[in-house]
Amino acid sequence: MLTLCLRGLERDGLVKRTDVEYELTPLGHSLTEPVIALGQWAQQHIADIDAARAAFDAAQDKSITLHT
Image (cartoon, rainbow, N blue to C red; front, top):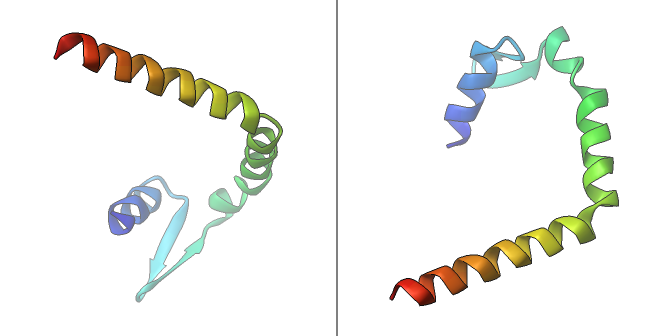
């Protein structure tokens, strides 16, 4: 799975393969700030994300119970 992800990133021009190693290209490095911002956003909203997941899982469990 990791190989597929890395190949996709290589295809998108975000990483390049050198022998058996990958390194970020300048375009890949340009993602550093947005990825950090996304991580910070996720940390700030983890309670909301957890609540949304719990609600989704409960609805799925209820749906499965109703259909069996």
